[in-house]
Image 1 (tube, rainbow, N blue to C red):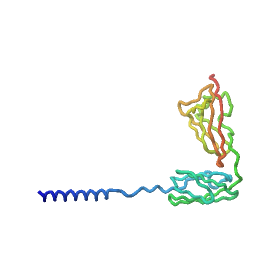
Image 2 (cartoon, rainbow, N blue to C red):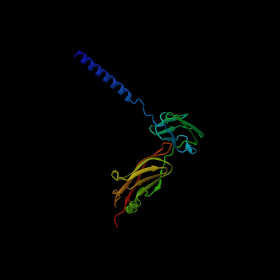
Image 3 (cartoon, rainbow, N blue to C red):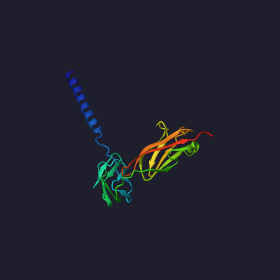
Image 4 (cartoon, rainbow, N blue to C red):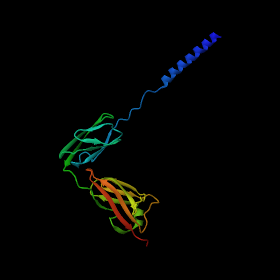
Amino acid sequence: MAKLFRTFALVLAALFALSLIVGCGGTDDTTDEPAAAEFSLAAPASGSEIAANATITLTFSSDPGEVTVAGATVTGGGKTRQVAGPFAEGALTLAVSWTNGDGSTSLSYTVKAADNTAPTVTGGTVSDGEEDVDPEAINTDGVIEVTFSEDVSGNIALQTEAGDDVGWIGKVEGTTGTLDLVKGKEIGNETTYVIAGKVADAAGNETEVSVTFTTKGKE
């Protein structure tokens, strides 16, 4: 009986040891390395003219890790980084490097005097204070545009006079802001609407957007 017990104990011990070996062998100690980041674009683009107080936005294919630019301050996260001076007037070359992928690139600009002038609204589908706007024509086009005096970034929205969002999709790109119609959110007659938002130029000069218009009555 004692012999049988010892044999049984040895078998259990062997099975336990085998389970440890299999368990260790099945463990994957490897970790996925993040994809090496590649430089995608700069805004303003390399080769263009910028103000001494401009901010340059760099976009990468993935998170570049730590980004360094000699003679400039780098902020931001994710796939984008913002590079700010102030920069000296004249020819400028920026040596950019990043740790995720050990990448590097060079950007060149012509720097002009600091820009302290905020962008302005210069035109668009409707004018501030305009009345008797035909809603049917706007709904048929499906878009409202706002133009600015220079390239800007930011956001705009179509609101009621009370400040409620109408539901159109706003986008700001270059010198143009657009509001695209969403089906079922058409504007109506005898209603006051406001195109509201905030935009800024590359130097950080901001402008509050407020364009009010009123649609005409039904004919």
